[in-house]
Image (tube, rainbow, N blue to C red; front, side, top):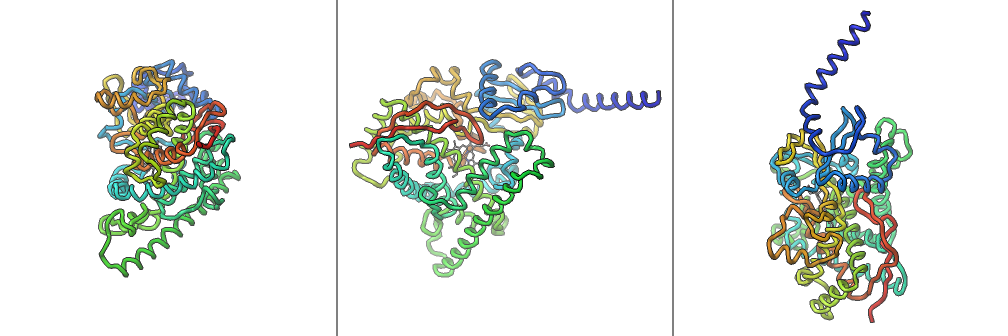
Length: 496
Ligand code: HEM
């Protein structure tokens, strides 16, 4: 009897505690469309055993069924997730003055890239963003375009070997993206496209491990994960990657110091030989009068390596896929390249800016295949919009992928029509928050110009020399980024 009374008191206390803390949250959740769920566990069973491909398809199916805002939850004490592709709500979220954190899935990256620009919040993010923005000043971009030009030449040389044959462009695009971002971030050429290096292997392997961790729920229980071989491997790789970046930072610090002594104050402008990589900007920066520590610099350099490599490889291979799939688009791109570049082998930033049709093609490709199909924010405060109120603590995912395929935003979404951007931009019809492959608002992609030039450069170099056609159709899924399930297999033919 005594035990029964104690138990009843405990249950009543638990219920009132739950109601006090979660009643409003549950009420707000219930107003958002959601799939059928079972009590207590909510939708958590949906995720057990699903492959990344199945999960990706499930999220799209849910949007087709429930609309451009839907909700799921991993249990009464678990997290709530909203997936949004409603332009007004996307705008409210991305331009919100309410403080937003990144969702928990970004945490899998922290051991490698620390809390650099991609993951940091509040004051740290603001200070770093201000500090790094000059790194994408047009003078610096001119220098980055030079790097892209040289690396794209290497890419074209490699493609020569496949003349008349089929090639999976995906791994080749990955190496080009790695080479360009590495040289831009650290000022060194690792020759990823032509040589195997330990650094390259480590970047590829850590990206694979992080992907597995973010999808395999058994690897997410930290206590158990620590006993696995994968955990030991992850730690070892992170040590190797950090040692590599540390070494580059240290030697560049010493080089700049020597150079400073030799040339004193002259020639300290952005874009000059002296400040040629993002690393140099970080090395010469001061926060509250103090230079940045090596560990602070490392997390930013590693962030650029991660954020600038996987995304670009995805963007590049889908641009090639779209161009190969639509021969009339390819022909127009080719004609524009010949008209703008003539016989000129070197391509600079001004020339890239003149490739206007190619720019539209890339935009259209990113509409259908945005490299980051979902990105998340955790609400530090309630977000109130016209249709719904999203409770504090909720994880909200913006989906440029679902938006790009929504006929309410882009009429005839399946049609590959680069001109839709021209017409819509000219008429000022399009809300900037309806097309967000690089996100929008204060936390948009700092590297978007770099990425756009990188894609234009490689497309221009390749298409001038080769005709592309599809060798086999693709299926897509999302791991850390959107990717083709079995590569992008193209037939390559040298132009006469
Ligand atoms: C096609 C290529 C790219 C795409 C589609 C892309 C897309 C994005 C998106 C959607 C975000 C926002 C992520 C979020 O809110 O969590 C982002 C942020 C970021 N991107 Fe990119 N990105 C690309 C290339 C690059 C490149 C080449 C770099 C560096 C050279 C870069 C560096 C970053 C950084 C540092 C952030 C964090 C910015 C901040 O929070 O202040 N990205 N990118």
